Image (cartoon, rainbow, N blue to C red; front, top):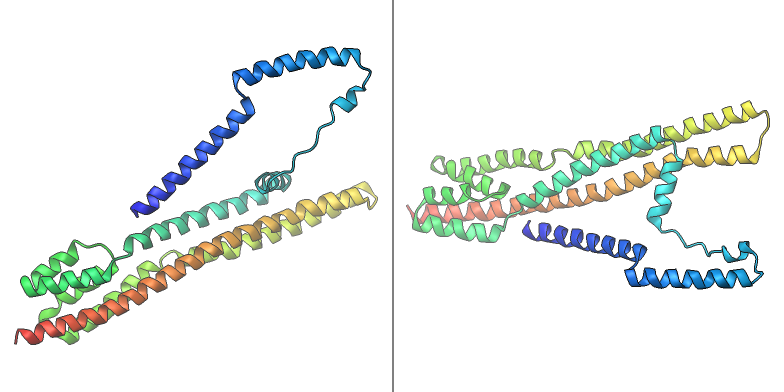
Length: 276
């Protein structure tokens, strides 16, 4: 988790650095501004002596727009009623996804190290010391070990049943919130498509009001109508990527829980046999 926060801090610092650099390039240094003023005075004198048309001097080469600027412009061109709903879908979906990612990262445990600690604690201090180690270790694996150790006096069979039952509860906690993320993934393109249908209806209303099928009216109306579907699909793709990562993380944790539980049962069986 510390590496994650450090990585995010580096990203923020780089973003601020690039932003400051962009502002610096836009504003310019004082020397550059003075040089610009001198050059402007020279250009004014040259312009007075020459007969070049003003329109020719004002011609500028249009700079290509990046993807972020294009996306912002298209978002503004769309209808704010449906664009705003799609944006809220993205915000809530990302909030849930980030919360799940943080929770799953905090639930990750070095099971090999924990098993070694539990085994050493059983040999040196018994079940109570092993329970103390599990209690002070975060993560679902440590919780499963604690439940098993708590039922140790009732036999290995009860330990296995306790591990299976508590493991099912922990799996439910790990998968909490996935249904809502799936809802937002399905909802985003549906809202976009609904905005497209309503936009098409409004385009036909404009045609009926104008009394003529003008290509300008049809093209502009259809473009605005289709923008909601495009942004709905973009939101669904972004949330689907997060959802797949979360599902893969949960599968990894579950497999880790199952493997470590088998090793834990073997350790308890060996400890029970040595104390007979």
